[in-house]
Image 1 (tube, rainbow, N blue to C red):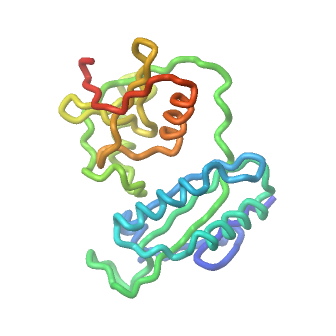
Image 2 (image 1 turned 90 degrees about the horizontal axis):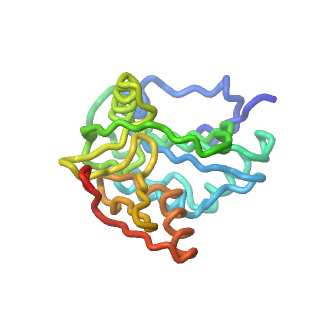
Length: 230
């Protein structure tokens, strides 16, 4: 089955989807993204994902190209056109395409919007533990913005892999932030600890769900600073 993507107003086959080399997302990583799991054709926690999308657009001063109703319609169409069922919806919004490369964006530039379906990651079949390196978090100061500029995360993950680890838990001056592609939770004395949300941590939708489930089950959750020596 041919995969269909939404690209700035059009539903087209993915092999025909093209973005200009002058698009600021390509030239500068001047873009944000969102990934939404879909179960039985239903986007999971769609409001929370769209709220985070709006937060990230606001953070980089890009106007939201669609209303919430329009986003829902586009996502629904992409799900339907790609066979529905279990999927992962990827959204990317760049500042847009300009005539030439320039650090200062033209105020009239219109965003480029990509929405595509991907296979949903398989469910975890067991609880096999993984190993994790403890690495210095050298990324920028706004990790709360879900930007496509993931070079820091990639380099840290590669560093962990080269040292023989599956993942890396990151810290800044001894204060734990997050892993390269997930949030961090610690179980201690039958209670859960997780770093407090700030600009150094992406506010994960799954993170908030874990906190919600734990609290509903009367499990104490401490959203607090965690040190590397705790």
